[in-house]
Length: 353
Image (cartoon, rainbow, N blue to C red; front, side):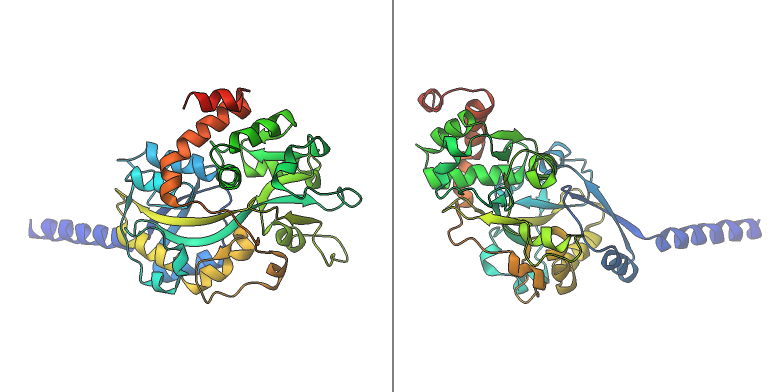
């Protein structure tokens, strides 16, 4: 009898020890553009005993929608990649829990927009117009933002839908900043009449419709770092000395974008989630970000790769206050949809405000 009890107890202890030896699996909900070096991730997993599982949830807006819809029963422990155009939505949805990472003191202070410490900045960049240099070799480029809607540039531009795409939303906000509440809808109505093409997300715009990918649109909403990425991934021999694409920095047409990471409420792996956030903000991970996701690291002393000399910073980027975005974002998207997708006039939409 005593032997049976002893064996039962031993079995219980062994089972508990085996269970405790199993690595914690941490699920990170990300947008489709997330990428970090596999060796770097493997090193983190070995050192921490935390196994990382990345759940790609579409574009940033679609990803955030999934996190909000699963509130109370989160499908992940951490969410990474919602930006400053969506920050207020994430905070208002109350899906994040505070965490004041010790790495925050090493980040650029201008990126610390959330004083509740529920969202930590990881990287930043600029959503910007790009053009195909070969197409415009003997043709004039637009000189003003409004020129995009002139007949000379008809059916040349592809943009993303701001209802589903974070760069699409950023570009919409740039038009609000440039043309104001009274003018941005007129600009979009003119763009619609000029044959602008609207697609769901960045990948479809850049890899399907942009002329560099075989499409028929030599102007695309992308990022200021896209020319550097084109050169970095070029397989031409010899490698060209300049990118085949370039930024089109029309005044106030580029939008300052910051991407954030946050721990989802309801996680059962809080300590592991905090260690992941610390690691994502550490210098090794931050210095891996530029050539993986083609944005600038949030950490001040993180070094940039040499190819980033082709990642120019726009001289007049558009910015809107987070409070202004939070207050008007949904109305701007709704009005944009009515004018661009449904074909209503800007005047009629304004009259219903």
